[in-house]
Length: 142
Image 1 (cartoon, rainbow, N blue to C red):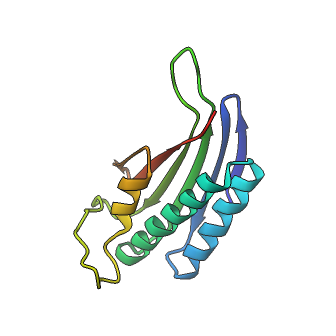
Image 2 (tube, helix red, strand yellow):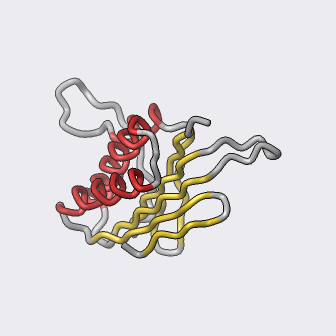
């Protein structure tokens, strides 16, 4: 783990995992343990873990370098009408954004980005200096 940071409007955590199959398991556990520490509701925690697992798996399938995972817990600001949310980012060195593709009923893959799109309040991708980041946001109650 790179670090856990408590900020005025929430908390942040960040990790870097090698591009190895065990990294999916390690990322799920790191996210789960951190969200439990932050007392995020189990339903939000379960969705976050599922989506991180999908995105880290995508990174492993298509990229060959390190995979970054970042969580940011943001408190809502009533003056700005922002809602409390969990922001999750998964980064890898491949610059190409993921593409949604239709998955047939017997296909073993092809549903990761569809899951993100259907489950997250918002999601997107952005290019970085050395690759891309796929991010999603899950609204938090209250």
